Amino acid sequence: MHAEKNVPQSRGEKELELPRSRGPKLARRPTPSGTDVLTRQECAAWLGISVRQLTRLDVPCAKLGRLVRYSVPAVLRWLEERGQP
Image (cartoon, rainbow, N blue to C red; front, side, top):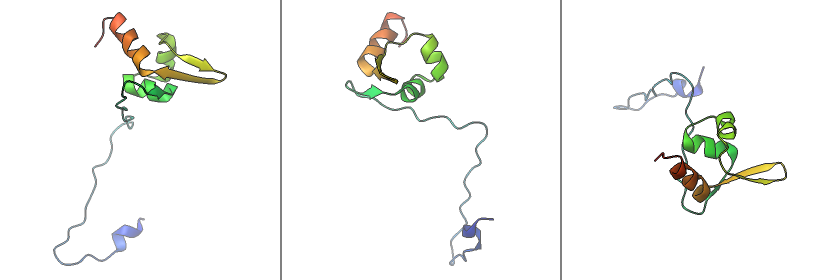
């Protein structure tokens, strides 16, 4: 049980119930500016695809040792070349 439910309410206050989530939580999409560099997870969330699909689509990236980073301007150019908004 949650401790918050046992807290007495003052007059006029109603207990706030949050809606229950149905299904998996969706990642928040970052709103990158023109100079951002994104991780695999951030870029996939921004595009609304899985990390695996990001790799399969051959989205342009920079590999720095084990790290992979995606330049927002390069990804936007790649999208334009593919004819997608």
